Length: 130
Image (tube, rainbow, N blue to C red; front, side, top):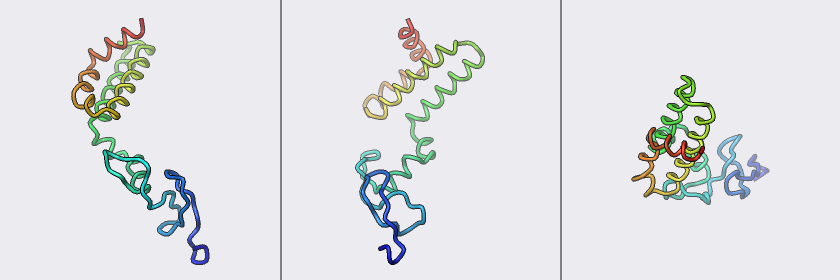
């Protein structure tokens, strides 16, 4: 491989060594990644693209709802209708809900949108701050 210009490199995802063949700065191998995306096994290169691609995040309803709620929290903090401490606590709670929704599909379908509503999120944040 070295004789023909293929340099060895270690894959950033699966940590296996591979010979770069398709690009000068190839970071990931063409082997199967140890992780799944939406229940599908992908190559390390496709997995890396799906993790770092913003288009997938925009199409994901869980992340879309999270981004909209955090934007609303930032606006209210800017208008000083909520305190900065309350805003930070609300964003932390929203992130917890998002991570739970990413791991539990049943929660994401039924309860996530209810918990992310403004009234519910602020009531739970108020409880946690006391």
